[in-house]
Image 1 (cartoon, rainbow, N blue to C red):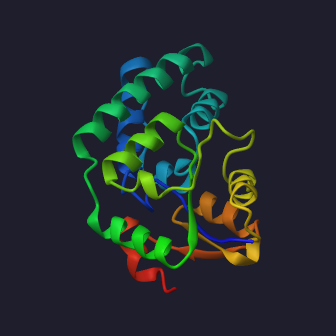
Image 2 (image 1 turned 90 degrees about the vertical axis):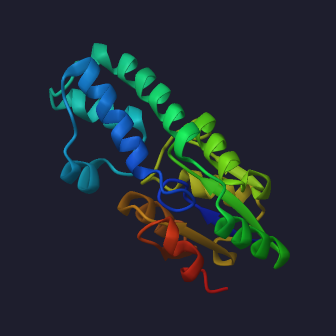
Image 3 (image 1 turned 135 degrees about the horizontal axis):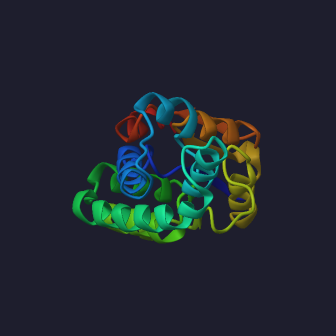
Length: 199
């Protein structure tokens, strides 16, 4: 059995939570004339896949179901543009990944983002090549707060939960991680990760 560290992406490996929030709000405003408040983002929607957010907004009557696909496509275009502009090589994260690899840890990224944006962020941050496993919301049936993504990563890495560490920031991600039985390290943002990883 291997030992492993599993990372969330947005807010853990990359400080990208606001990128998704702003891109979605721009798409919502353009297509439906609606925006998610900062309070609702932080208490309800942060950490959920875009499609889940849009379904919730449609169920509440804030947008029309017929607008969901257009909003999702525009949000994705805007997100890719923001990543291209703002995501930079992170030497601190590279140092951490190198240290974990040298100490024999397998490394995974488990995210509610789609694979295209996840891979782009990891590549532009300089840490893609350290990943032994990447689980996106396209690789599972149940996104966080369900633990499926983390369980799938543990299976692929041949790692028992008691030999794993999961690093998370959002309430839904932390809920997902706690249900696996692994040790969970909670961080407020991506800059806290290095100092909290006491290996």
